[in-house]
Image (cartoon, rainbow, N blue to C red; front, side, top):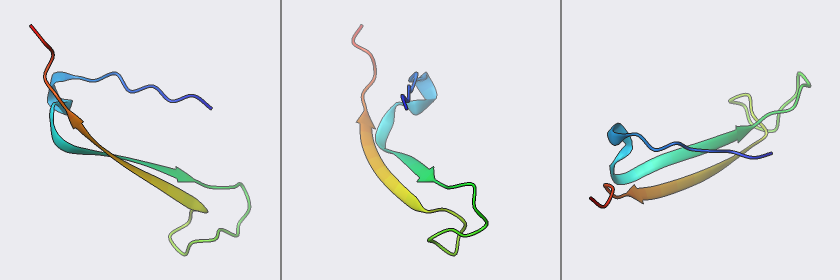
Length: 50
C-alpha cells in the first residue's frame, strides 16, 4: 500500500492529524467502532519557502 498526501495551502498549520483505519471484510472487527486497527500521525506543515 502506498499513500500520498498532496499538501494544499489549507493544510498549512500546527498539528495536522492523519488517521489511518484498517478494516477487514468480515462482519467481525476487533473494535466496537467497526475497524480492526488504527494508526495516528500528527504533523507540523510549514508554508512553502518563497
